[in-house]
Image 1: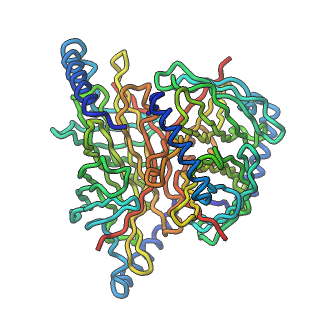
Image 2: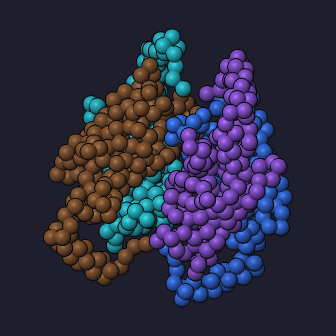
Length: 156
Length: 156
Length: 156
Length: 156
């Protein structure tokens, strides 16, 4: 799965060339950045700050109309985007600490995903996530973690 | 899954009482903090900084003797611990951006777990993780993510 | 997470009532069965046999047009559907043993999901899956498993 | 991730040689079969039938002493083992349909794993699993699935 140094060299050159061409021809292809407002496929909204120079961001996850999310209050998120502005489909990761109505249970979700730009220039975020609800004891640890996917599209 | 306000009230009281008792009787029970050096069940080492006032930390993931990890260079991690010093089994999350020998593939792991203190006072970290290797295109996104668990014990 | 006997009693009654009403008003609501031909969101096709009396089925997973799947040959699947014809959104599970072109690596996927009928009567299968590629040794076991989701719609 | 035909050829030869040597020198290395009684790292017991000629088995998952499992009744399982008796570390998959005390919720777990024989001849099963609890509606599907690992050792 690892490329040889030679392959890397030519790969890096091809990448540089691709980026140079992209800069002239198709700037829209390079935008895929998390900054802005997003809607998930379960109806939640997410607002992400401007990225710092090293790709970090903060933001909020907002409750959506979905029945299963009515317990959620606006919840802070923090994360970073890798190689933003350098590659066509940058990866990202962020953590949400859930603020819940009527509950003091600690719940945290880790999102790990990649930003894709469609042929129409539309950005889509594809992410898998783990959601942990604090277990009361080691004997209950086995059932603490849920898994799923989320797809986000930009709110214009 | 949410407790009623009444249940929360008594739960909060029971928690306060438990913490008060813990403070007198068994201070060791409360230590579970990520700061320090850890060894994973696959033989990797991890060094975590002192926690900031709001529970954040940084650190490094170091290559271990395990055959499958020989390609790994020292890699930076960042994360946070929730309710550190307040609850007996605090949850945590951290992200590792892998630095790989002979490879420029972007790989990121999100760890999500909980710190448990055993009856002997030994701390153990139980975590699930997602590992994403950047996909070249949306059509290859489906196979980008691996999942697994890690158990860490403190190196003394 | 378990209901009290009282809640179960009224739940069971409500369910019986709902099913009785469904039997009169909306028979289409109860169909959600896996038998037939399906297309996944990654472009693969799946053909599932008629269900046996106890909900078992067999079938085939067929290669799709997706770039990442060109290595796949027609692969056998086996599984079962729970409470088929009894509940509106039955769960299901099935295992695929992959037949691969130019490869003798053992790869197996376990799908676990639920069949939903939309307001338009269209059935959709929502599944999470684990894909294991046989590890050569215990030291490589940690990276053997991928995770993801698939959504299937019926081919008419 | 696929090997070239040339690499496959030499790989196949090396495998054949390894198997031939193993047949002479270390028959214990090849036993890794699921038939028998196992204990999971959470204290559950599992009994697996003799394998059929094509690797299928049935069995039962039994309640363990672990606190979180007290609600479980003896639950049926079905699955199969790939390449049993042919490779040193065969993969396996099985499905458990949970029978629960005081609950009519449908819960199903899919296990996907591999059998390893240690240097002492002890067999260990390493598995990842997905556990789905039937969602009441599509809007609640996102939280239906948990993920985790189990390690089983043989009960003698």
